[in-house]
Image 1 (cartoon, rainbow, N blue to C red):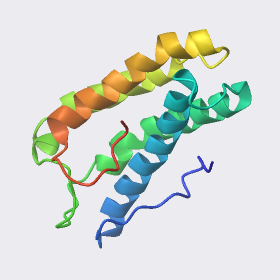
Image 2 (image 1 turned 90 degrees about the vertical axis):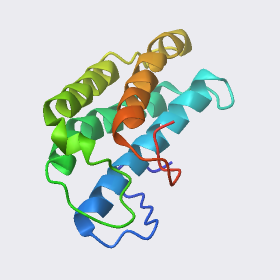
Image 3 (image 1 turned 180 degrees about the vertical axis):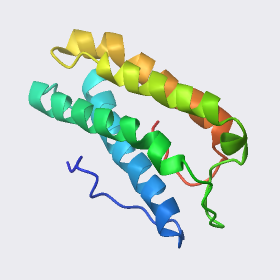
Image 4 (image 1 turned 135 degrees about the vertical axis):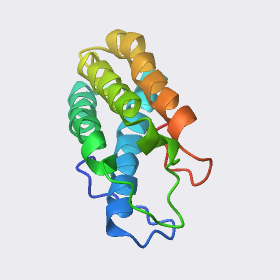
Length: 140
């Protein structure tokens, strides 16, 4: 499974800056899907794959503020305008997500099961506030 950010979902997006945000979230979704499948035993736990997914999430969550810094427009963007009106809150949520990812335990299945919910919850909290319903490229 590619977790390097080379995944791409267009969803009709034409603005390259908005596409970069979509690509970021698509990469996160792939990593979280892999980890969720391991945690639920739909996929065998593999420590090296789990670690690679965590590293991908560390990189991408740290890039969230950079990718969303400017309110680039696109008819297919799902980001709510409230994101830029509440920039400090958005950045704080991105930081909490990054912290949760750094605390993700990928050394064992038990550790993964114990620490993954905090990551998923941080993603949901931000999406519930700053993402319009739409395409399925969310991180859950």
